[in-house]
Length: 87
Image 1 (cartoon, one colour):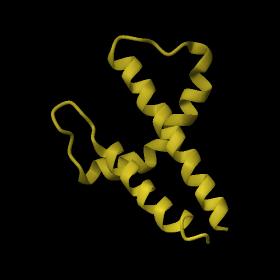
Image 2 (image 1 turned 120 degrees about the vertical axis):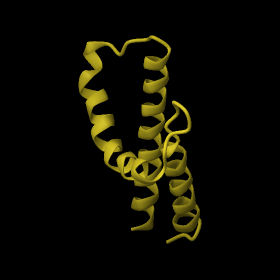
Image 3 (image 1 turned 135 degrees about the horizontal axis):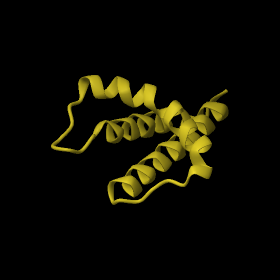
Image 4 (image 1 turned 90 degrees about the horizontal axis):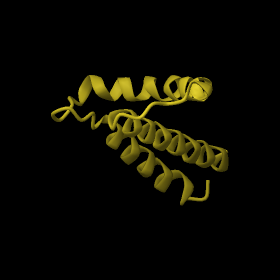
């Protein structure tokens, strides 16, 4: 069970990283190709509920949404607690 949770946390971290990269591309004037609309929609569907929850309690700093940093910190804490314990 612990191995499955560790894998799920790692995959979610990767998906969050993809979302960060996509937001940077868009922030610097890039455009996500239409051919990737399915995967992009999936990334937003999977990450938005968690990020939205944190956004309710953590205001943006200027124009930067820092809620994602707290999600990465939480995932790191969970990974250390669950994955290093060998559960």
